[in-house]
Image (cartoon, rainbow, N blue to C red):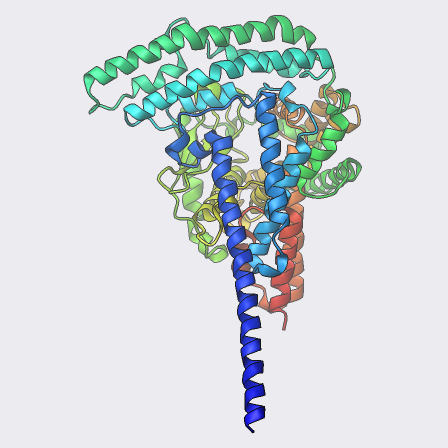
Length: 593
């Protein structure tokens, strides 16, 4: 008995040691990943300090690296390679389910950014959507993320303005290199950039958008400090900023515009075809080919046209569908407003109308406040409606920006759909719930995968009837039009960048299949020319979420709960679609009887 007891005790000790060793190993892997994610996020702020500003972290508000230099490009590449190697080294077996998902996301993030460096994107530093000038004008307006509440805030912004000057110089140097290599913007896009830059060049500081912070100096600030800041901003704008912006404008008009290309797609520039394939993967988070996406778009356009025909018949319109598009575009009854505030009020009324139904579909709802605002005048003419997230700490609300360049021609037929997408329960729910989720590591709170983010927002447009909307056939037609708009994107984006479609052919295809105005369609087509692949993400993501919902409803039957499904989609933050599908499949399997 004594021998048996001793042997049993020995086995127990050995087992306990092995168990403790396994727990230590697991803890070490978990701790290593947590530290790695923390370091990745912290270092990203040093690399991209403007992101910290938009996320409400004020430590880097004075910093701005020259992100168009090769030095910065090399620093980016080293950053992503370092973290890719580090995360691969962590054993999957040491991680729980959520940690393993974080590892997969970080690996995806690093790989896509490393791949993106194969194309010299710095040679295309300015277009009508992606431009440091536009970002700075928004920040400098005093109505965005850059704070202006005390002397330090004001001097921080002066330092950033000073750092912007060499960035403009580098942009012009890079555009010159782009001309030599045949990597230039289409002429149509260069023409859109010119008025944007021109509007920011002022004859005097007081007329400049960048003087806006001085117009809002805090009342309780010491007068001597006010005077000093006013003088500093005046000198910066008159002596440095306006002359530099005028130099950029003159370069664009006199040198870059004549050298810009007549073609529209990326397949017409060196390395562009390969880059477009990389961008498809980046934006759709799938391995789909351009041909597959093009055909999917053609199929979806045909399906949605059939649904539109039904609405046309419902309202008693007797012409063909294209004539009905013209009817919707020009129907003065759908343009009832005379004051921009009426547009804002209408969106708030839509929110009030759907509030009683939201609890039926969502038990996870954000605490972050929400506002509807008119888009700033300097970018209103070429801007689309958009959502800007609130700060991570919730002190700055999420904002739905609506461009209203001409209120008398503002058409309301798609406003209910637009609110669902950009605001609630679209981007505001999605982004705010992610930022408020204390179970997510910091780096996952601000990730953005367009196929997931825009796919979710497009999916929420289909929830309108469940939320008490779309009782007006024109508003339902607005939803179909928005979905058609995204289906058309699959056709024209791939058409422009892989099939030799001209800007004009893409515009005509859109005019033949949707009710948007020609001006709006033209701006959209030029957007696809400027940001290849991004427009594919909406429909690809929406179709995947609809597919997963249909699968869950079919396999779970009475066990399916819509609120739980929405929780599963939203609770992990932004994910590549393959990882989202893994997650939902595991959830379905866990609920099967």
